[in-house]
Image 1 (tube, chains in turn yellow, blue, cyan):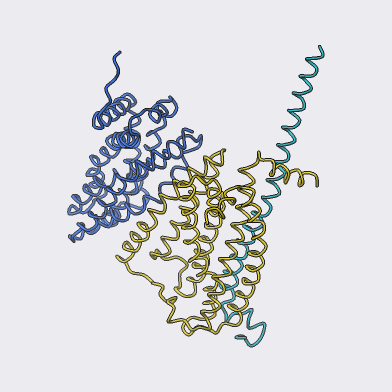
Image 2 (tube, each protein chain N blue to C red):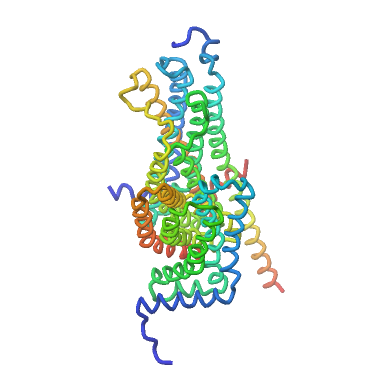
Length: 248
Length: 230
Length: 72
């Protein structure tokens, strides 16, 4: 397996691989996003207790579940780059940070909009809301650190350390916030537990989660390619690509 | 000069700490300014929200802890700044001595200079805010266990930003989110104590955070320093 | 189809504001991110091309200088 993987440690090969994968991810995610949105908005049945505004679930839940996964993926990439000194993993981690930040922001904003009619308030200091707010801050810190250094490789190492520190802190933050919140109990969300959901609602939700995951994949590939280009600007193959664009 | 004897870990720790303390005594403003800042922030709250005793009693733990966080943040930048600009930080990284010990010594010195004064002045601040007398021991214990954690976590952020020109604002963005758990547990402990309820559970968790930070943070700081001085 | 008519669909049972706002913001944020990410590639390549040209020019100048010096 290592023999097979080895060529992809080279920047050019992974750039090409990303280029071939990118259209597949992009097309399938767009198709599924459209299907999921139409299914969720127009065809899924009404919820028993909530009115039509429950349809926000079809974007809120995918964004919320995947924003945490993106952080873990980012941390894994950092770990790979630290353990095996693989520069490309740094590029992947740098590519993922803004995507994760956007997803977390979407989860928070759609949650606030959903909360307005269902809880009667856009924001409560609920455990889950608060920990997602802190997750946004963690993402913003990582992005800020990426931008603070001129040298991309250096920036990645600094941001990588912060990412790993954040991984240690995510469970601590989660439990601290949960515990803090139980002192003054407010609205809790448990309407998402699978058994309480009919399959007619579950399927469009799963479609949307898959669509979001594919979209994250496509965006990661696009951004990963950019990072690879920026980090290999001196290489002849990048120069060739650049020359083609410059001629136009 | 004869060949220098290798220092034992304890000697190394004391020497680095001694040096930092001596430097700090020379520039007294570095110690005093965060403290004055803390007192002023505490003074601003009653002016901003009104002098009702009941209200102040209720929010005193939170105010004191938030102010302590901010003043710790203010003093943190000094931790590696001078060493970085005069090159002694690079000397430290190049020396054969274990970086872990030196980093721990520097953080300890920082805590002695900024955390300890906060603890000493805390009863006075609590008095100003009419804090529940029952909660005084809890306030002191949480500060004694919590301020080292602030120094330890903060050191990671400083080490990451020390090489940057505009590190100050970035520093607060990096470490304030990481300070949230300690703030939550500390204020929860003080509030429990004010209601005459047991708060040993909260204290145990803060101690656990302290042990975790004590063992992990010097490694992260060492790695971050190597990045910053590159 | 859950809704009886298209106008029903738009009205979302009286909660159109919340539903369309949430979907609108999500769509806007995601498209912005996509456009920024896709455009970045071109600007990056242009920057790299510019730098390469600049370096080539410097190399050329250095070469010219050397040949001039050897002539005199």
